[in-house]
Amino acid sequence: HSASSGRSSQAMSVTQETMGVLKDGTEITRFTLDSGSGVAVQIMTFGATVTSIAMPDKDGGRSDVVLGFSTLQEYEDNRTYFGCVAGRVANRIAGGTFELDGQVYTLPQNNGPNCLHGGLKGFDRVAWSGRVEGSRVVLTYVSKDGEEGFPGELTATVTYELTKENELKIWYKATTTKPTLVNLTNHSFFNLAGPGQASIREHVMTAAVDGFLPVDATLIPLGQIQPVEGTAFDFRKAKPIGQDIDTLANGYDHNLVVRREGVQDGDLAFVCKVTHEATGRCLEMYTSEPGVQFYSGGNLKGLLGRECKPYERFGGFCLESQHFPDAIHHSNFAPVVLRPDQTYTSHTVYRFSVSS
Figure 1 (cartoon, rainbow, N blue to C red):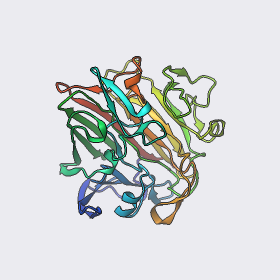
Figure 2: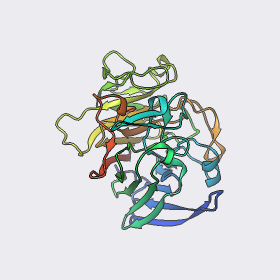
Figure 3: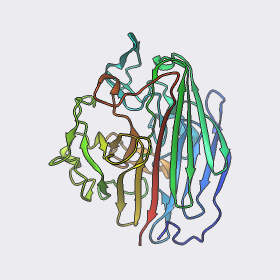
Figure 4: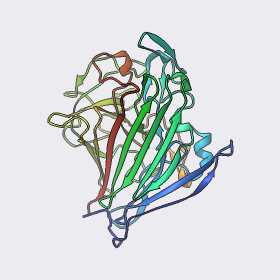
């Protein structure tokens, strides 16, 4: 049945309030999207961040299923990427440098030798402007030419909608004044047991993924797509996330190659389904993107989140839709270059449900 166990169906709604003020005085707005059928999502303008996804379990209990903080100050003080939009280029760019049209650009090396999630002040660290449009929340950010080393003024728009079917739909759009790079994603950490309750090891995943990207010691793809057959990355049949997690140095932090045979460019393809038996909760993901970074929270180290619950190692997982990491250095990867006469678009859906 739908996620509305224990709650009568109500009208969908979108409301907004002031969440707080950043240290520089910028006021941050928080929007609440209620599906009217069990799920409520909160989004704030700082980082275009999903701060909460609350949903019932099979016994009518209710909890959050994403990691996050109670206060704006905690988000500002801790760069955790919880729920944020990562950009201008999500994931890693090797060496913090790239060449485009014969010009070399230098970026912050904020993750070992590499540039991660847009640099020192990525799209997760800025205030977006937000507005309600019907049942949608539309967030816009204009990134200056040269910001974090990237060329071109980039106008990015992220639109969130929560449907009556408890689907969180996310649309990304961007235009630029000069040739540049763009690769946007949402960095929500999910835990269907409820954050801080238990690790994600017991979650069971089934994925329409036949290949993944092997990486070097700094998590830069080596360049080839490796079949999942016989590896820890084989989720073609349902398997607990914890089953092979310890065979990897720090759990999963790799790009999965989405099976897109028979799916038109720009259309949604099924990526995966994750279930948690004890609560009956289920998350399904669909995306227009060629890849999804599957991260199992290996770097979580007991940071206190909402309700002062510690987020321990493997306490949440991310499914970040995107073009392949470090694509600018791999001619066989779909390009992340955006030119002034083009519009970047991307579309991802997370669907929440409960089964008794």
